[in-house]
Image 1 (tube, helix red, strand yellow):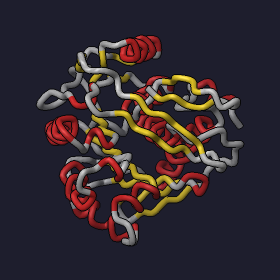
Image 2 (image 1 turned 180 degrees about the horizontal axis):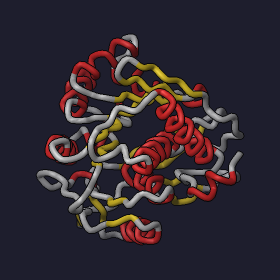
Image 3 (image 1 turned 45 degrees about the vertical axis):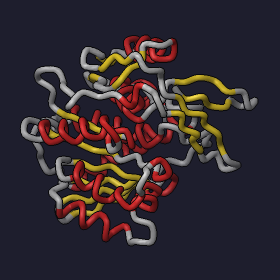
Image 4 (image 1 turned 90 degrees about the vertical axis):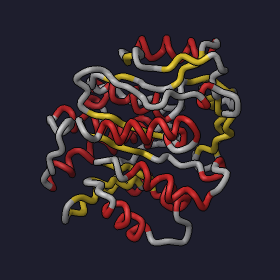
Amino acid sequence: MDFVPDAQGHRQWTPGGSGLNTALALARLGAETSFAGALSQDENGARLAAFMHAENINLDHALISAKPCPHVNVSKDASGIPHYDLHLAGSALEEAPARWSWPEGTRHFHATSFAATLGLGGEAACASLRDARERMTTSFDPNIRANIFPDRASIPLLLAQRIRHADIVKVSSEDLDAIAPGILHDHVISEWRALGVRLVIITRGAQGAVAIFGSSHIEVSAPKVTVCDSVGAGDTFMGALLAIMAQDNHLGTWQTPDDAQMARWLTFAAKAASICCMRPGADPPTRDQMMMQR
């Protein structure tokens, strides 16, 4: 649960977490979506479950935990950039099965957040990515928070263990700075591609996004909008990207897109993220809202 300041500075609760945000973006854009993560039985966990049910997100494969719901206090600097005060210890995030399962007929498996890298959840995510890649397409978004890792030097190896099982990796330029401080981004991306990643997406905030695949390097700009905050923008981008790839039948079995198709996907995802930035908290647009926004 995120507690986000409104225009008057009062904190309002809003559903949060990278997995939920990405699932929400997918569902609102018309993709059949299941959330396979830990959900608390406490009041906040019940709120999250009710919210996801109302958004047509399937919870049959979620793990129900007796531990409290994790929460995050979000603050914003003068530029609207969010900062996160994480309260995770002793929460439902500390529980996970040996590996996550998914509904029969699933075409794509996405793992996201530092929770997919650390602890039992990280081990389960890694095992599930490995299992999933044998039967469907897969993606991974590190969504790194370097300050919560007990050993920051272990981050590149932990990520590599998951990236080697992903067809698609989405990462922000801020993530890359945290993952490998002082190292050129191109060098990090080259190492990831050598592990077998087919598509790397780098989001760069107001500077747009880049896709690297095959011999192609595609860049798109970000729409110019009045930013409320950027909470959930990266997750919205990822959900929108997967939603339009699913619409074009490019999930399930990997098919290399052409440059024009990739540019169209990136433009769609960047537009969805920009709409999210115009609203407080992680609030991805629906398909109708995407059509209305010019």
